[in-house]
Image (cartoon, rainbow, N blue to C red):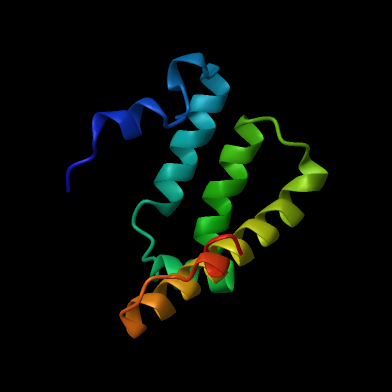
Length: 106
């Protein structure tokens, strides 16, 4: 799969060079814990708030300094929204049609 350069230019990524040694160690420990964990489809990860997916996302949100008391609600809302979006795309693809104008904004 090829990714156009303009997509990469507009993508925000974690700058690992700016992480403290403690933050790097935390990420490496997380990687070692989950690296060989089997994961269901992204759809099922979002639908069930899969524990490995959530552990990764919580770690990243902490690095981004999201307040601890907001992480749980944020992830639940995010997973629900992404799951719903995937379901809409799945429905559209199964029907072989494109969304109507009113559906695009929903």
